[in-house]
Image (tube, rainbow, N blue to C red):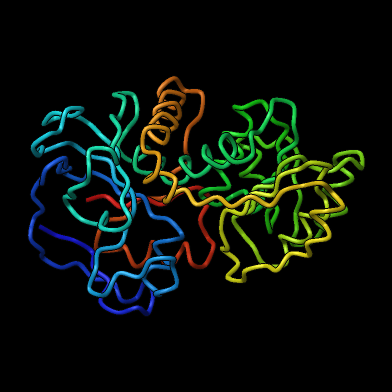
Length: 324
């Protein structure tokens, strides 16, 4: 079968399509014939050797797929051959077939297409865990989303609105903010030309924001933290900026607030049942038409490097998807 492999840790340019052995279903595993695979910022970092885990080359990147079950291993009880499913993995998704543990997959409703299914699990899974489990976001609270036009940012805007929050979307250009408004943002901040702290304080009448969703990092983290409300929660989701911020601890003291880490991958492994419940809830919303993950563009496997390069250059609104 065909698979996209990273041959050296030099970034998206190192990717090429190879012929590899088709996977088989071990005990407790299912094999999925991949129809679509989501592309995410961590995939870029993995090809550069900059992510939390570093598989040795050559390896197949990609962390989420949607497709059809073609084989099941001994002990599998939740799936049958022919089921439409979506699944996550650490890497290996950019291929025509994958084998994953049964616990890593969810059934895909008939009303949810493969492209949307492949664009949902990682970003929306991260955001459900962040907003529900880590921040305990309440109806009526104000949520500030940094990087609001990216994959997880888009998910945070949509889920924040669904949970009843007042959502302030922050991004680096008016074009990205216009997109965020189409996803449900109530208010916006262009931190390419506006002072993030002052604008956030102004939009909240001086009281500050209750929850900050930060997948960006860098200097924006401290600026956002200075706009937080009493007993607010700063969600540390990622560092797309490339710089890991160092926060002044006195701000946490003075604001009575919390800085909370969000590591969805570890959560999904440690509590697969809760993660699956989150994913089934999101897919139910999508099937009912209550939200629609935005797929910016699709690419064949042969153009995977181009897709990752676009994400690296921050040109994407929502998600990119590879078609197998």
